[in-house]
Length: 137
Image (cartoon, rainbow, N blue to C red; front, side):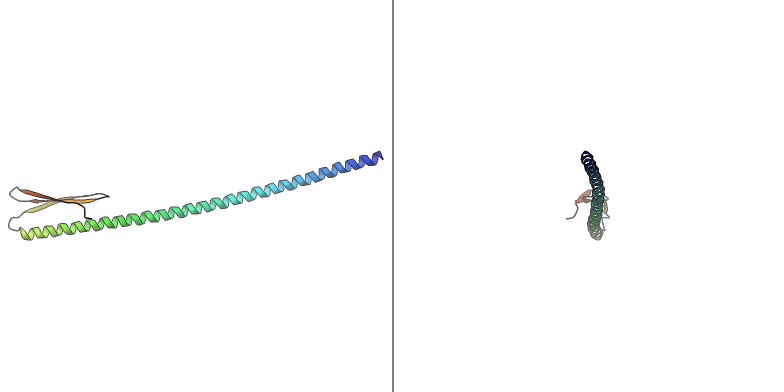
């Protein structure tokens, strides 16, 4: 009976070892699959973040381009308005004061935020009358 009991204990130990080894292999395989799945989820999340960032950058670039075009158009429109006013003043001045031969001289300051013209009427007699035209609203 001692031999049978010893054989049973050895068999139990061996079966336990086989079961533990099988469970260890199953756990390692599950760990490998879980690690791979987490990696795939992180890659998918990174891809979505990258696509969202690219979309945001493209949208911002389009908005900035549109804003700059609108600003450019507004400045050009103001500039054309002021030039038209200057041409009208010059034409009117030349028609009214042809006998005095007065001259108009002017300069303009154009920046990103404003447009300003300075016009001087120069009489040959040395008298000067100046007018400053601020940017039109």
